[in-house]
Image 1 (cartoon, rainbow, N blue to C red):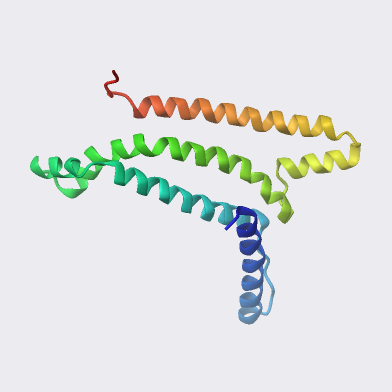
Image 2 (cartoon, rainbow, N blue to C red):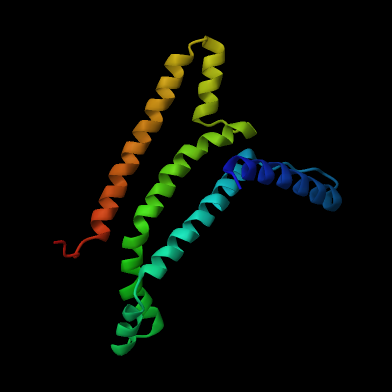
Length: 168
């Protein structure tokens, strides 16, 4: 399902459900915060993508790694913590970093449910000043800056995860 459709389903669907339940139980309708709905919707979408990344990383680890841990007499928890997880992080990091950058761009979608994010504030500024190029350029530079900071942090994490690796 597209992220925008998921956002609408979570926001309006949860709004309807919470209002109906709170009216039936307490006689007072409650509203769902757009921030909460946006967080849940984007969290669900990104969690589904991240689960696929982790599944692929688990499948990339050879069965011999598990067998080696058992041959050393390690328990399942220690095999996972000492042998599998370090490899899993290294293998999943590229996919997770792509998801992070995608999530950062997808946060602009929450402006359609009246949540005040960067894009919504930019639209308000454009409509009041009639200077679209300037404000959209500033928004673009902010997203670019956040992407650059994220890329630097991801690079540091990648170097940390790859420590001890022998490259030829």
